[in-house]
Length: 154
Image (tube, rainbow, N blue to C red; front, side, top):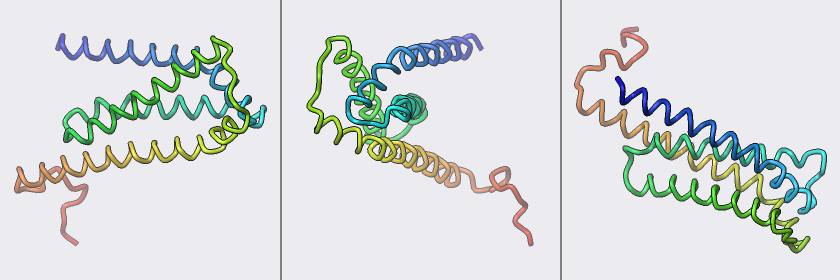
């Protein structure tokens, strides 16, 4: 019981830390989107979408802890790339680094679709893991009692 409470407390603390990191990096990411010719009135969507993808990655990593090594590596890699990207964005803004406008515009144009693709990739990893676990349960247990929402008779 105490172990579960400690894990829950650590999870809540991590969620608060992630929220603070997202809030603190929001303006830097928005500024970078504007410098890449994003529509200024819609530029807030870039950091918001990034933060949502970061939450998906943060949730996926522990949920996939029982998955195959390759699946865990993929989810961990996505999380590390997202964290490194956010840190680089914050550092570049703090250092006053300016980017080539053409390259920045290309990144801003592609970024929503790249984030959507990565989010879908993480979702598919999770679904595959759940399906694999469910198949393992079906093999371990010959009865379907409790697994089906109906009794199986017409």
